[in-house]
Length: 142
Image 1 (cartoon, rainbow, N blue to C red):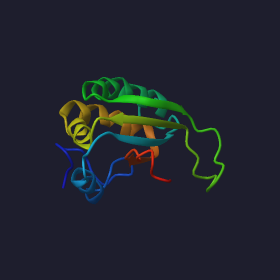
Image 2 (image 1 turned 45 degrees about the horizontal axis):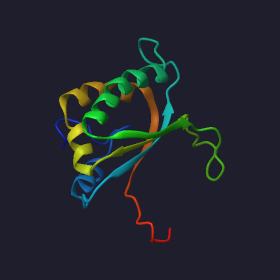
Image 3 (image 1 turned 90 degrees about the vertical axis):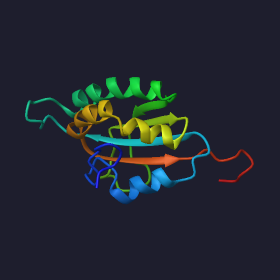
């Protein structure tokens, strides 16, 4: 089964079928922030490009699409040190991306343009974790 249009589900870089279905079926009452933890490949692509170079190719297209969906990059930075957790699970970059809704995100990742750009993302990353987050009301204790 494929997600969206033909997003290849179940790879180490994409959600599995159940994860994609859960996201699409989740209550969609407002903004969602996607926390992206990224570990880039070293220059092991067939054409010799690095993971960072491939991710930039993906990012150029993805950023335009995020903006078109009404989303925005909230924060981007490097993963400097694992303070709590397995130090072998370090991350090169962290991105927080806000979308106006889960539906906007699903629509974006289902488009043919995104699927074409996603090939660069797959070549770029050794591993990734993406966490969908909903803002908590200010009066709710964390």
